[in-house]
Length: 611
Image (cartoon, rainbow, N blue to C red; front, top):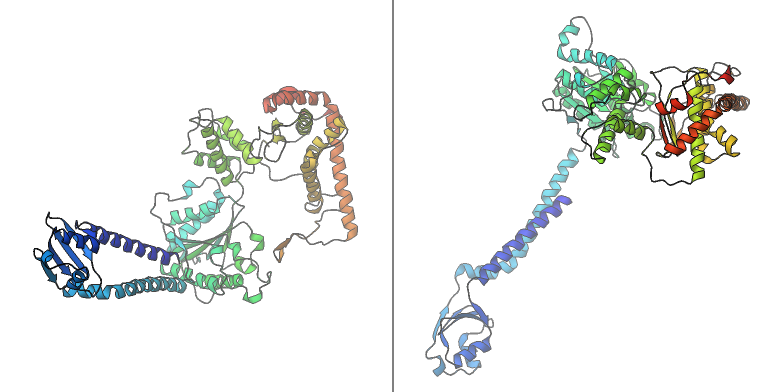
């Protein structure tokens, strides 16, 4: 429709231009149009030298050389016109009268053009409509064709394994796929079979797509990439047709790689929806299964798929012969984060004092995408302050912005709320500082960030992959510290501790139901965490325990929260003097860095009250 409107508008514009040109030419001949009365008056005054009659137009030449045009009625002769106005023969004796017959072309053009021009315009309009309709028909015929994009291996942004920091084990697994594509005889001679598919598993932002591009860059073979959502349409059979088209295109250029991003969009477990066997998504999945390992053998076409939801994939996708190997891309550790930062700072000017290792230490749990976003935010903050290089101050501020949210210095709070916030955050910080085996406090602030009125930033000194029962109890104690000190100092609590209480309850429940750390209920889990989708609603847990056990779980949650509360209260009571100093410093400076905080509370050590 847009194309039709565009063509019609263009044709109409051309028509207006031609009409304007003709109008300009008609006005450039220098003649002046006058009425019949003016001509009669000029004849009476003997000012006319000659008259030339051509059709309905009389061209009059005056004795002073001026030329003018008079339009007479159709079918009326000049002599009849003059006699009607009673012009005497004496007045016409000195006037040369010439009658010209119109030429054949001009006559027929004047007779036919008024009828032919509308027909020509209508014909052109129909031509453009038919042309647009043919374009729509061709699109309709190609609706079921794959629109996979082929990766250009010769461009300047070619990605190799050298451009991917971290993920050492994942790169080693994928390097074998590259070797299969480069030197297939090396493996075939040993009886090895080329893998059909590689499934990249990892959370959002872990670099799955980047690794797939690196495989294509290393192997130097054609690389087709599509998203799982591009297969599914509202029309039945389109998704399966696009799968067939994709693999036909890939087979013509084998050896090659087919990359399907977010395969969980079409690869979910069959039978979970309401569409039954005729569900369009299931038909698409069935076609993928057949193409990867059906009767027809697919040679030298490797399918690489990526997903962050392996738990919802159909088991038929994960069996050997389809996705033969699964490559897990985990969160980068300290060394990997430092390498990733080095990759992303290549085009960013850094100050000399910038230490990327310190930035990596402050960003545990960050993915590759998080680290890239961190450096981008630091560059934006630097530009906002009209600086030329990125410094540590901007990088630390960017970390807090990514983790907590933007700073809200414009938020005006009264002195009472400011004091409540200072006690709340000081409670978190003091308890975290004096609890054994707790992460060190890096920063305490009562300046609002994001949804938080204040924050206490704790960062582990090293990457940890396991947590003990005492670690969970310590985390709950730190979360409850703000609530406890508010109640002790002001005699009541505020809504500022709502998020802390929710998180503390969640940690206590996970300790019991997920990790089996309850001494009363024993080493078992409670609740089956399976996804069920019904009418768009997700049900995350199915109970596999009785109401009596549910009541015991509630008692255990209360027991652990009470235990952590006693531990936090003991520290707050023993370190009350230092807590007051921290509160005073926060009310004065609003923000305390690690060095300033430790100068007030001293080095971390177990509280005497806990001995």
